[in-house]
Image 1: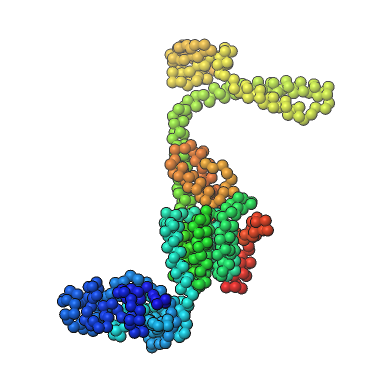
Image 2: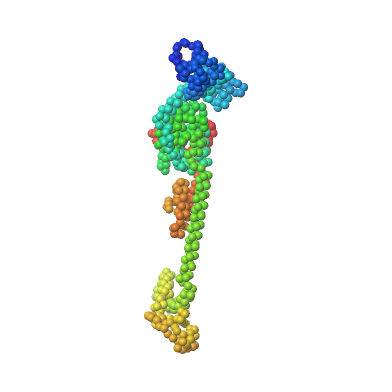
Length: 485
Length: 89
């Protein structure tokens, strides 16, 4: 029995006797011809209705009991829930409801198969008589027919069978190697400066990716490393494209890609096969730059998806994932702008009130009365200074006039210089200290309430006055007031 | 406070600095003159970010490997891509 399947062996748990049974389905171990009603060989059938009620051979089973017993056994076996079966498609019947019934044959055996409408609708491949196919599904019992059958959930042309096994074997191997560990996955940059894209340069995928990036985050840059995404040459070109992106550095500004997208549009499992290639999976796992995969449609899973840092369901979704949203960034920016304005308002407001406080303090330190008292004295001094300036100015004019007689060419520049000198002199005079005036023999006479006395009529006999001299002061009393005339 | 001219800052750098500026202004406690300078820097940073958000255009290049193995990038204009995608989609 070279074409024997594992489950066939399982069904013949008892030592196989070549040629013991008739051609066709192998009889189940609990129902060998010649021992009706003996549900269990060695009593190992789980959940057998007969086992708990009475001893072997001591009862007559109903048909339903047998069917249920068989069904329970089938359902209890993990291998039967996830089964790949290869064979040639026999007679095909499609019911009015759209369900498809066919048999899979391989020379000496056949297996009844059901392919329900819902599963057929999503399958790219139909069962046709004479085709060699690989069916995937679960084994179960059809009570009404008393038959067991394969409930097919996907159907592939033969040849895919090898691929499916390769897929599972490679997946198990790389998983054991730790290539798919969650701990290997790296976080993506929040806003990448340069996105490396490995995909076909023609076709809708690149267009879709760029469309998403333009809409969502055009502040970034894209560098495309073209590769084939289908066919025997595809894996090598994908690996090369990833390697190019990893060593790319913009010669102008030194930018390197900080995230990679590996993408391909939808297709049959065979179309996507390059993304199950071990070289490609390893290249993705070993990429020094985080990789986001977007291969096929949402339901397609390839091995690179397990090795990627992030798996996106589609190429467009991959593009969405790698960049922030412009709208969100604009909202965040507006919020910052609001806070900036508020804080500025507060700071400047505080500044304004601080200024007001100081102004009030100044007013207390320099009350208007004090200022008024000083103003008069200042006026006097300025008046005198002004006259001094006039005199000096006149003297200077004379001097210049004489000089002009001798030197007819007196430049405007010299005149300007002289004027500046005069102005400086005037300023110097204006700054004359009142004490210097006192030094020249003047005195300041103040009344008891601090007024500077400039008019004899402003006082009267008997008033006490304060007389300030260059050094020291006198307390004086008015004995007589003479008319100013 | 940053001294780089805002015109050369990337969006991220400008946004990060704007965040710092706002935080410092909100914390307060600095002389009025410094506050004003900081505020003006903040306004400039905001303008830079807003400009980048509004006017940025996605730049797309395509890598080409030359005979010696050296890589070179060629600019792709949106039209090129649309044409390419349009004919083969």
